[in-house]
Length: 476
Ligand code: 9PG
Image (cartoon, rainbow, N blue to C red):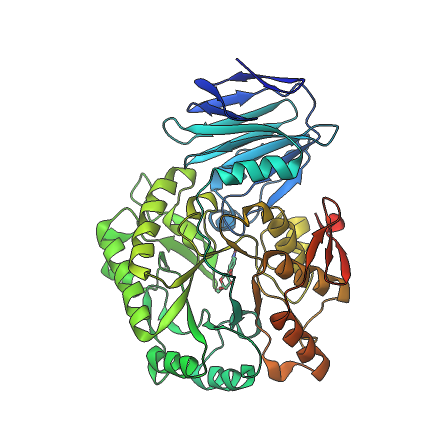
């Protein structure tokens, strides 16, 4: 079997082959495409928001991400443990002339291996459809994206989020103060992040929110803002009351042990079994409750937990998220730590990279732990940049921009690149409390929120953004 793209012939192994206008549709549980050129770079697409998406050297095998405990929250563990370059859902090879051969799954649960001489696509179970295209990078990625689910409504929101300045150290008094400070800046959403809940799995206000979460939502709405709330609905730790009270709700491995879901907040993480109807009722009840409190912007985080152990769990994940989507009605749902392709059509907003941080890179983690998923602008920009092609399917969230110099180690060019990502995607957020800003910084935040800059591509990595030219090449 062969696919023909102008003068280029690509030998294939697949169950079936059908020409689409200009491209091809393949079928099969496993398909192979043998490029008639040596692939100079492989586009490896990480599984979820924080997982690496980048062009890599197919001749240099990936280094194992450390520590092992973090793998389940860094990527589909299979992709990290295979010892070769595997990606989630799609993969592409760049030809010496710069053209790109892309193999992308059209059904859930797919992985793609890339070598200089091969693209191999495999569904974790059963058969499925594949898209194959060759041509200029932007065109083949856009053609693939057109075949994926879409959900786009209105312009992306402008968000103040508590995480990147206060982390879990939030409370009612502090947030009411910031709420006063943000008046006069054109935000639309005031989003309370991690730190309000009693424990993972125990989604009631803790002692630092003495008047409860509905009270805070009312104060936010009085200011003309939408109230936003963070939840990690499928995550628990061994200290969560749910862990003891509902042991049958835990996702378990073949030997009956709770399946490791990562390590964070100094503790091992576990997942609720999203295939269990009672778990879905519980999560739907949670969404109903926070909506009744007055929150209509929900940041649903660590969602990969509902899809573990990896690609195998994507169908189960999607059914769970469909249930949440139904329950949430017209609330804005921002998915985070979320399997990317399995979230399309359900999420309003989707985080497409690692967390921003007020520094460029944590070099120990990059160098010794081979971990491109940790917080830092370098990691956030690199992976987000490689997912901008999803911008017609979902509002892509590049994470927050920093305007403050207080408690920050960023250079001017680094800030500008991150601010540029917000202009490229239209998704504008910050965690800066206005009282931490100098008058000039506040001016800049005001301009950021109130003016949409015109974006003009000047090359594959260069953009004119308003008056500035930004070059992302060196970061990628
Ligand atoms: C709250 C935070 C913020 C943030 C989210 C998410 O890989 N990790 O260990 C890892 C931990 C936390 C994390 C991202 C990755 O942050 O992205 O915006 O909501 O949770 O705890």
